[in-house]
Amino acid sequence: MESPGIILAFWVLSAITVAGCAMVLVAKNLVHALVFLVLAFLGMAGLFLTLSADFIAVAQVLIYAGSIAVLMVFAIMLTPLAARDNANSLYLLPALASGLGIAAIVSFVALVTPWGELQGDALAQNDPPTTVAIIGDLLLGRYVLAFEVASILLFFALLGAIVLVQERGSRESQ
Image (tube, rainbow, N blue to C red; front, side, top):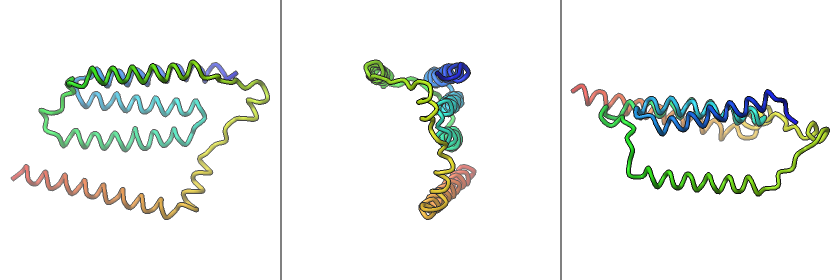
């Protein structure tokens, strides 16, 4: 059995994640909704840590809570001020129905799956190894060319976004 601290952390992080997701739906201001989305991303990273998935937790923080959130801030700031409200749309009821349907399917699968529990020494023998060193060795060894090409591609995408923002700013000032 896992320690009570990990179980408590799992439930607290689950509550933070679900509350952040719910507040994204409720928030009328788009910037506030983005802050709650970042909170949900950070809660998910904490949940990955409780599952001993350390690399995925760090990737969640860097990619989603960092990069995607910054991208969304740029998108929000580039939209006209009148279009920044988080108003309900025609798709609210279909989205709610499909979300509830997916939640029902996931719940059904979780309830009917025969989950086996590891006991005593089997739990200690089956602890997952840390993955950061293995992935780091692969990224800086076998896949270094793909890693560098991806970084150059992202650099040029950032450079293109900066050029587009400068062009738009110069057009608006004229």
